[in-house]
Length: 204
Image (cartoon, rainbow, N blue to C red; front, side, top):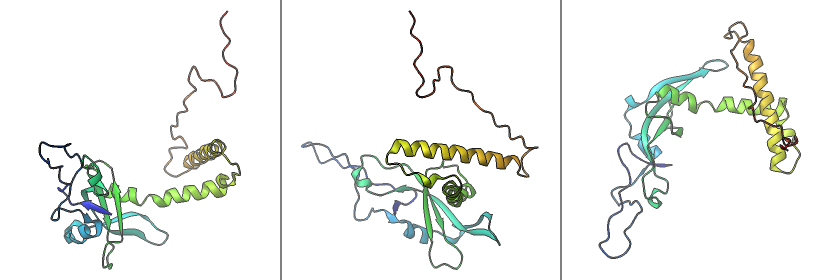
C-alpha cells in the first residue's frame, strides 16, 4: 500500500508547449514520490500513537496502540487526471512489536475521532459472527440452485429471518426498556402489488 504523506499529492501535468495535445495525467518526479504505509508509520513520533480499547474479550480487554493520519492513496494515481481525495490511514502498532502490524484506509469524515476509527476497523468480528450464524442456524449455506435470482431470494429470506431474531433477542437484553425497543413497521406503499398478482382491471 502506497500513500502520499499528509499535505502531499502528485504533481499536476506540465504543459509541453503549444504543439500537440496538452497532457492531462498527474505526474511524479524522482524527488517527489509516494511512500509505503510502513515508511509513513515508522516515521511518526511515539506521541502519535495512543492506547485504545475496543471491546471486552473472553478473559481481558482487547487493546492496542493506534495512530491515524490523513493521506491520499497513491495506487496508480499517475493514470488519473485528478488526485484522489484524502482518507484516513489507521495504523496499529502493538507494544512489543518491532513494526506496525495492520493498516486500514477509511473514507469516514475528517472529524472522526480515533476511537470511532478503531471501533469500525475492529468491527469485523461481529460481521463474521453474524455470517456464521446465518450459515449454521438459518441455512444460508444450504442453497443448491444454479442462478443468481434463486440465491438472491434465498439469501434475502435468511437475512430477514436473522434480522427478526436479532430484534427478538434485543427485546430481552438488560438494556432494553421493558422489552419495548420502539420498532416501527412501515406499511406497504399504496401502489404496491405482490409479485405475480394480476394487473389492475382496466377502465371500460
